[in-house]
Image (spheres, rainbow, N blue to C red):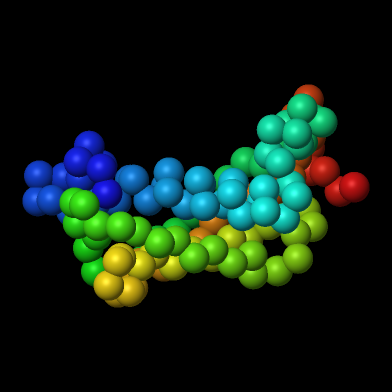
Amino acid sequence: MRYAECDRMGFVHHSAYVLYFEEARTEAMRSMGLNYKEMEDAGIIMPVRAFNIEFKKAGRYDDLLKIVIKITERPAVRCYFEYHTYNQEGEHLNSGFTELFFVKKDNLRLNTS
């Protein structure tokens, strides 16, 4: 964990997890052959509709975090991602989810194709 992502108590600031989850989501999509930049270049974007996180234990400065991500259902118009964060001891720090939807970049209408 980087020092700049922690609060004065030495805990990972809650806002940092938004970035961590986004990075995990981007890499998960890439591993499935879905390159976000290529999707944007093709005119499809994925705005976030919902984000939720439940903290179980604080991450701390210098922890090595592992984020396990799961797509909870086959993507269609919407896509749901579930996240679980663990520290180097395997302790479960938090769980979260995001809901994104596919829209056409030029008119922001749902992409149903």
